[in-house]
Length: 392
Image 1 (cartoon, rainbow, N blue to C red):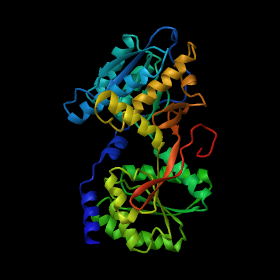
Image 2 (image 1 turned 90 degrees about the vertical axis):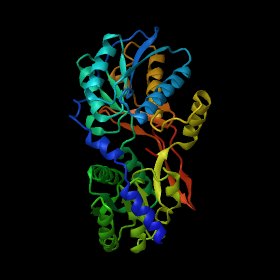
Image 3 (image 1 turned 180 degrees about the vertical axis):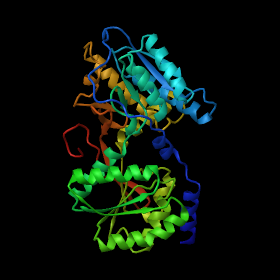
């Protein structure tokens, strides 16, 4: 037990604040829904600007930029007769440069902007593109920048929470307690879970937060467990991620009498990355959501064969963006890249499964429900392959 707690404490102490940084990066929300967008000649190559974070001086940004470009080109190779003129612009991960490159790309004929990655960049690109009547498909997952001419492709807390809560209620588990980090990501996650549970017809019977620190988790665990018991919660819905509090909070709640045998643990974040998380005692039996694993494995294999390296986890969003653009251009309509067309109800198919863009700039994605069993991931409810079926 000491070794488990030591690992968990070390994980929390060394937490990477990537998600929180993305959330903190929000600027002003976009305007309301629009049907705008440039007209195109669908019979000619369509100019698409891909904004990547190259030039920042960070090796991680260079890797990401290369992977996004590779994924986009792989998607273009799958389009058949549809011709995409892909033009790559480097933003250095900076909002000002993203704005400058957006203007440059549109001046050079771009009909739609794909990217950038970070929320402040995407917001700056969206403002610049809006003045020119061009839509942006950003790789961000931050709903605060979505709307108007900005559509986010990244997976959102709301989409994940709704899928998990709906599945739980269908399994007869409707009395849910939210357990959240007291930080930006945790607060946003709590709100998403509350909306997802309400949409699913369940009930949030209690909410328990903890200071985002080792001592904060240790002090809060008994109180959270007591609240769950007194409110007869049959689900603990956790916002914690594997790089942060998940290892420690899941173990301490289990030690406080909220074992997986009696209470269903549900995670708002992926519990299989890194894979070592699957061996933690506290997550055994827990549920989380993930993209269609069969489709993503096909993508990984094709990417590895084509480029001799594994794809960056975010790179699939570039493939999805090109897939959506290609599907619309293939219809041969001059309004193929307007917001009205981008938000078609049938959606699109990408490397992560089916997805569609909403009028508010957010997205819906078909997700599978996974369970941790014996240190392995087991899919207990497959990802839907179309909209309108189970899972939506």
